[in-house]
Length: 260
Length: 231
Image (tube, rainbow over all chains, first blue to last red; front, side, top):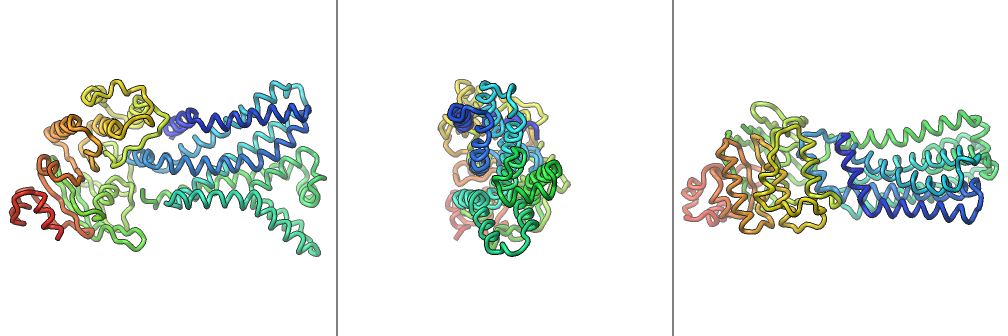
């Protein structure tokens, strides 16, 4: 698996898109710091970008890589390697190279600006950590979709719909249900509903830590009340891990029966 | 060498292999022929473990290979379409495949034979179709394996490369290897194959030498006998 991983990363690190993505983050980092003139504020703005953008890029990269390397995967499948290892190697390769773009792209401007001397270092690290989680989660989801869909265009369509659903539509439905049932106690419902969406979960995780959960209104208050900050923190991370493990588990099951 | 028993494969409602039985003895070149969609590639992919059959057994040297993977170390496969990661160079790809198989390889000899030396440091994405196919051939033949499977090996090759390929296949045969080829080019079959396996409707319709096929169909050339077989 390590060999496949090595070559996937190698291949991706030389692709133009990895650099476009890296430079994009680099620019965002510099621009935000320049406009806000304050690391703490920049971190909050950045959160809003990362939480929507990393899932989108992860989804697109995942699907694109799967379909583009299809013939090459077939060549690998004819080699004496287990199927699972080929796809795990590719999956980790994409996720890691995206994470690298994220860490370096944002890390460089913030470190140059004096991150290590600022109090925001913890918040910033959390942001990067959550961004990395989102990369791993959405590449896994995208690989699941691609593995189950032979048709490239359909696969792309489903993947984008999945992102749209989790990033936008889910929140809308969530809000509508909160408004419709606001006469009932909704604490448990909103907690559970949050767990079922990695984007919401990440957002809340960061907001809780940024200590501006009051801005979040209801959900934030419920989260603080229910878990106390530390417990909620670990539970959220556990759920984020499940969001990686469950798609990977499904992927390896699917691979056992898949024809290439 | 290869022993396939009662192999069934359905893709949704389409039955591709329907109780196929086939025995191929060790050594020699067998051409797998059949009209488009007759299940040639599916059969080969079942053998490689890329397509998982619904029913049946595949034995290589008396050993069941379904759901296994290490037997592929003793098998070389030339896929139909050669499409490699466009960011790697030729030499990197060769090194990578070598890295994946713990085996002796003689890639330099083949690189010289097909004149690929000047392309070694070029990115795979910038190569022409024929050159890619040459790289594909190098990757397939650089290992010493008992079973060699070639899916449309002649695609995109120029006449000189084709001559080299034929020599290469004959040389492998002389070493006592078992070679399976699918192709639609009958002159290639006529020249190379010891045995013809003709697939129709997911079953073996004919199996035997080129001469036997010609006699059975009362035709003098292979192309027409195959056409007679199909009709």
